[in-house]
Length: 391
Ligand code: PMP
Image 1 (cartoon, rainbow, N blue to C red):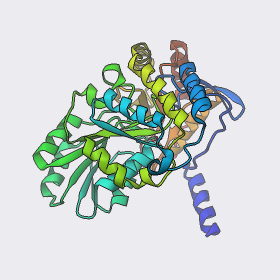
Image 2: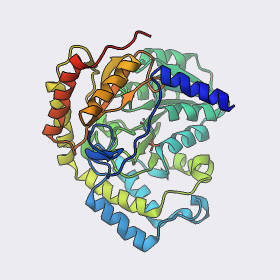
Image 3: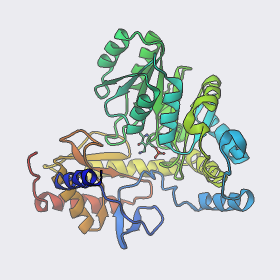
Image 4: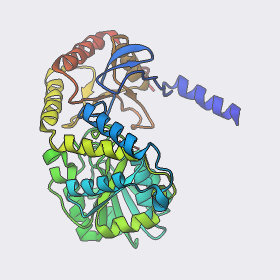
């Protein structure tokens, strides 16, 4: 087996697909120290600049002193702490749903929910660009899995029409993690009514950013229905870690009984929930942070004038700069790095072949000078970075 693994690693290296980790020596922020060097970072999903916020740190320290650091047991034994419970109730109220359930990560939420709600006689319908963990959830559920072209409501309707499944679930990212665009969720919900389906919305990148007071993509689009189940992650705009699922009380009660990634695991430490309660307060009263974030988005779009690479149309904090070739995307990312700027190169299989890109993510913690620096280095890169090798 080791020979096989080495051959695979070598192949990735020659194709420009090797992924690298960096060692972070500073708090997560717009100015970080990675591998011992200072960088201006456009890598993180900390869209509101909360990951390093003193109010959250204080809440966590206070709760750790009071409640300790370990959850000790799974939720259904003795691990469900008062802080977890308070956070679940606060999150449900915040997103306007009857109930919510905490998971340790968004990944665990997606695999747990889809595999619990769907079974052999059911069907899951997923956007082709959905996050990997929605697909993994569909796979684990053993339901039939139908993937439709990105945001294609007509193709989805044809699949629903043809389906004879017992239960049907449409699963979609609300804001696509590598593209930044928003799914046509209102049209999906109308299809749910017509074909007796349910809609599972992964709002990893909308929660905290979109909608009134950052209540998320569903409130941004003004969508409400008992057919809606939403998942929000707490490690992105909320600045900490974890995720929640919100929906009808029956759905949450059922998940408590049947979602394996909820039942058979130790919940995140209670102090994280305390930090998240503080985060929720910052999100709710965070209009100034959101205004700063949207000002940075507008500045980037207005000032970046490239001919060689294209910013994909996106109104959110995720601004993909499409390069195409894997090697060229990597060379551009490395050029920026040499100039002290970190922007990750995203390559297949994370994105479709031929669409390798730089995923620029903006934050309320960025200043106008930060964004202008990125723009000027990208302008210089057009002449400096060699073209990719045709694949
Ligand atoms: N869904 C989407 C759309 C994501 O982008 C991510 C994280 N990249 C997740 C789910 C997983 O969330 P977590 O990092 O909390 O596991």
